[in-house]
Image 1 (spheres, rainbow, N blue to C red):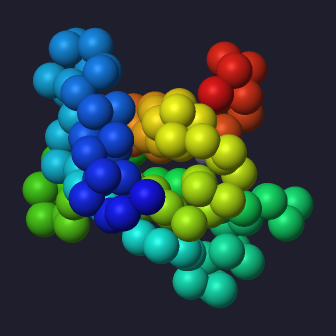
Image 2 (image 1 turned 135 degrees about the vertical axis):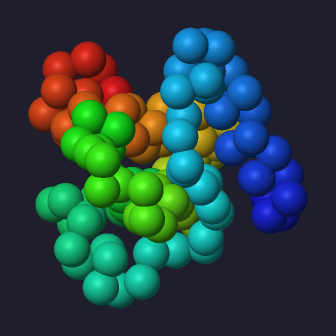
Length: 120
Ligand SMILES: [Zn+2]
């Protein structure tokens, strides 16, 4: 799948969020890269699994009055890793959606164990 098409799926996933969530997305950039760097894969890839997405930033729940000068949060979706576990474009769309929701949930302050409980 070419990059513009993949990026459209990411944009669609964000568009599909409930309005309440979209309004609360604050200072967060969502970007697509082919693969994590070896260091990122080592640091964040759990149990040798492929890293599909990565959230880096300051969750809304942890921001305080000093936050004003901070860089935007960044969510990265790794296109090659998503494609590697999907057998069709429809699966890619679903996996992109799931990954975007997962990383955005981190932006809202949910951690991985809580997300796991919720099925994400
Ligand atoms: Zn996570």
